Structures are given as C-alpha cells and as structure tokens.
Amino acid sequence: MMDYWVKNEVRARRDEVVASYSRHRKDVAILPQITARAVVANAAQALSDTLAAVARSLRRDQAA
Picture 1 (tube, rainbow, N blue to C red):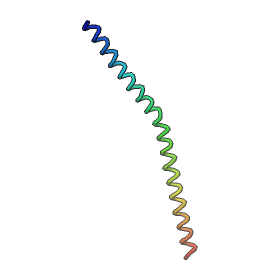
Picture 2 (picture 1 turned 45 degrees about the vertical axis):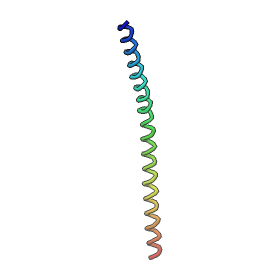
Picture 3 (picture 1 turned 90 degrees about the horizontal axis):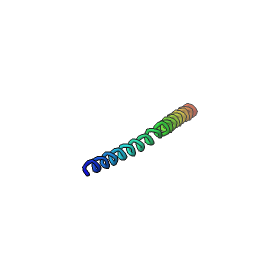
Picture 4 (picture 1 turned 120 degrees about the vertical axis):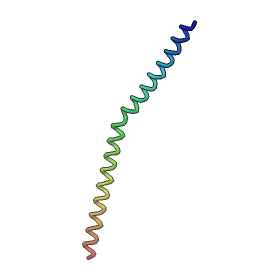
C-alpha cells in the first residue's frame, strides 16, 4: 500500500513540475516579443522627443 501512495505522490509532483515548466516556457517564449515592442516604443519616444526639440529650436531661431 505504501508503494502505491509513493508512486501517486511522485506522479503528482512530476505533473506539478511539468505544468510549471510549461507555463515558464510560454512566458519565456513571449519575452522577445515584449522586448521588441519595448525597444520600438522607446525608439519612437526618443524620435518624438528629438523632433520636438528640433521644432522648438527652429521656432526659437525664427523668433530671434
């Protein structure tokens, strides 16, 4: 009877580990997509900031 209980416990723990690993792999699989989106968003923001600074500079030069 003890052997049966041990086998069931081992199976249960193994299933937990496999499920956890599967969730982890899915999370890791989407990281490059999230990272790429963040890089693009940061680049777009930097470009927007640069263009705004250039526009301010041009307005300041025209006003002078």
